[in-house]
Image (cartoon, rainbow, N blue to C red; front, top):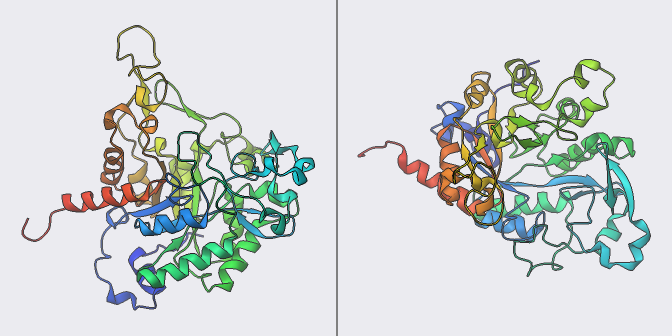
Amino acid sequence: MKRPSFSRVAVLALSFGLAAGSVAGDDRRPGHREPLVIAHRGASGYLPEHTLEAYALAIDQGADFIEPDLVMTRDGHLVVRHEVNIAATTDVAAHPEFARRQRTMAVDGVPEEGWFVSDFTLAELRTLRIVQRYPDRAHVFDGRYRIPTFEEVLDLARRRSWEERRPIGVYPETKHPTLHRSLGLPLEPAVVRALKRCGWDRRDAPVFLQSFEPSSLQRLERMTDVRLVQLVDASDVAPDGSLVFEPPFDRPYDWTVSADPRLRARRFDFLVSDEGLREVRRYADVISPWKRFVVSSHAVDRNGDGTIGDENGDGAVNEADRALLPPTDLVERAHDLGLAVHLWTLRSEPRFLVSDYAGNPVNEYLQLLRLGVDGLFSEFPDTAVTARALLRLEEPGPGR
């Protein structure tokens, strides 16, 4: 069954108890509404990811939505971490009382060594502190903040909505739902219960629920009217700009372990085909692909030495050594089917910026916004808000 279309302005109005008809300007096509700024793991370019402090900073910077990734403790509590393995983002290795918890576990079919949320109770996790994941971001805040629960994030969003007099939404992701079900810790019922407790289990709530696994979204579609988002991944970009699909990023993991050979034969790129988009539309409202599905890049030999590598001479091989390719038609095709398009993830460091952007992250935001995307995941929400304001200035208005 096709999901009903939604009106973003009406949703935001209703979240404050306003009549939908009291807000004007919602007669534009989906790609022409005010695009959403989604704070990826909070303002994680500045503060350690998935902390209440990073979410609060994102709100201060003007983000519309904060994005908590949800995993579950041994005793059934939803907490916020990007991965089930907390070795890289907490000080767990410095806690001798948990040394024996270190082990190897298969995560979506790939063995990982570390410490896993499902082996800890909430009380035990509360004794840990969060550290910065990336070596080139500020580490002065390491060890200051603790792992939040989903309920704490919801409370923060609701409180700050009233303080700011604007809706602050939440954009949770069910992380590794197939793995959690195999552990006897299903995510979806707990997510819906948490939303019901705070009154946000309805279509006009400022909530999007996202997942890479279609079966997780299909379960949620039967449990709630909240808007749903199908994430789309790939593992890399080839030198010619084509997308690479290698395990575990070749397909949703629920397809990998499915008994249906038809699903096991598909890759993530099926979801952005015309057939795939029509299928997504039956259970979701938004398609959310990696940005390279909309604008890819290719490697070039800029210095003419016959090799492709460190073209700008900065000592590293990264996005700055590549050039943009023409955009695809994915945004237009998704809009034609009534799906909104939210892209991920935009970062400001030069190593993440293709050479065409001349080291200025605003240029990337503006390109994608001009293509009509409906939302952008950013780790630097202040930059996203600035780019959105600049886009607004480009639009013709009275007296211009």
